[in-house]
Amino acid sequence: MKATIEIAERLVRKIYPTVTYESVCSPLARSRAAMCHCCITHGMFRATIIPDNYDFVIKTGRSDIGYKQCCHEALAYQRACESGVSEYFARYIGSFQYHNHIFYVFEKIYDISDSNPEIEEYEDELPDSLWRFLNENNIDDIHNENYGFRDDGSIAICDYAGYKMWR
Image (cartoon, rainbow, N blue to C red; front, side, top):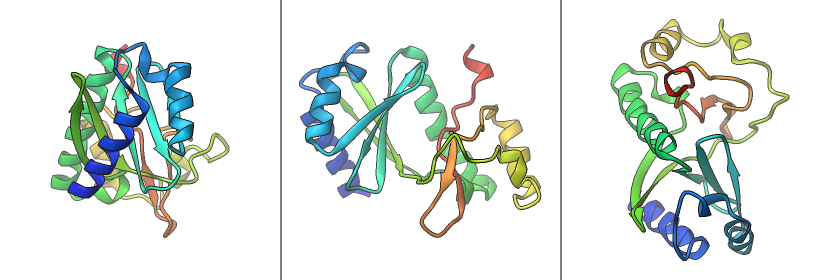
């Protein structure tokens, strides 16, 4: 785990000479990421660095809300471990700070696609304890681009920051 964080930190240092909210998705950052065999994707509040050659992703905020969402995901994963449903979530590996920005490292999940069926179609295959956990932890944004599959075919939610609580 420590080695993964160290590799993630080295990638971030190569991509970002300095880090600001504006720079996390800038053309310069995207170009530097491509030279490191990574791509940068983003949503409304967060950016995700996806390395081609590693089994992790790196998330960071594009705003204060984005940082809160990253922190919420890390805490939600810890609660999922305590509740016995962590196998359904991308594993939280750890975090580090660089230029006063916190970067969160998570397991990489594959086959994330807008062509995936909505997760409710798996309702019969997923335990009631998972649905209860999602509800109790305000994880309400599980659409087809927020989950995917591991190499072994098991389903994993990779964006579980929720939505309604941040509007």
